[in-house]
Amino acid sequence: MIQTKSTSFALVTGASQGLGRYIAIELAERQVNLLLAALPNDGLQDTAYVCQQMGVEVYTFETDLTEKANVNRLAEWANENFDVRILVNNAGFGGSRRMTEVPLDYLDSMIRLNANAVALLTHQFLPNLLRQQEAFILNVSSIAAFSPVGFKTVYPATKKFVQHFSEGLREELWGTGVSVSVVYPGPMITNEDIRQRSERQGWLVKQSILPPERVAKIAVSGLFQKKMSITPGWPNRLYRLLSVLPSQWRTSLATRVVRREIG
Image (cartoon, rainbow, N blue to C red; front, side, top):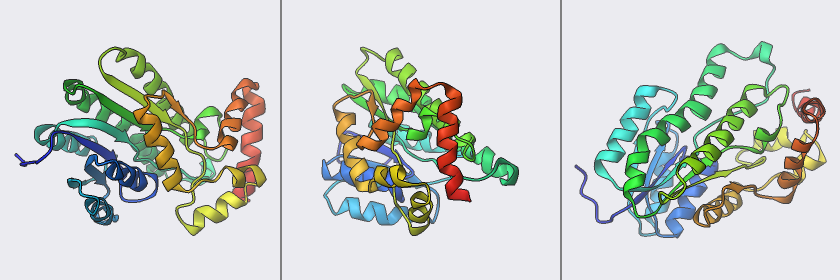
């Protein structure tokens, strides 16, 4: 049993880089103690160090959440040693590639991480969260959840899963003290490759780009306000309006944008 000085923690997955890193930092700035999970040798200790400088307790767990056994190991470690008040299901990945050219393992890993891990981790942590006087779940979806997109195909489907899972769970947990929120980020520039790919998609996509640290602040603020749906940036909120169009129209429009990226 780990001896901790404090009573509650936030668990953040995918915390080594990108949005997960900045959500962890934002929580640390708000003096929330942290459990950080990410792939081995992916920079997680750097995130932990930055957060520790803000005077909070930080523990790390390096693992690959595409494997069910690793999901269980993470949950067992955290549930046995900590009171978890906040669960942030952030780990995930995507990309723009032709379905005929992607390896089978790429698709399998995306579904396991983006969808399976979210549902399994939430299930495993709910008893812990329900023990707290007040608790929060933040699931990271994507603006891509609001339309099918060619050349992305599986990614928007996994993020639509996160949306429906989160909204259903929120209703199921109504009145329990556990609040469920889902955030829909648009493009975020975390490296030069992503910048170049986003800029090839056209003017509207470039306008929708936000730095991950800004998205993290909006997401954490919305979480503590118990918002069900959090969509950072006006271009992304505009994109959500595509959902009122017939499916064939919005799919065609979204695919046309991505087609510019892959050439």
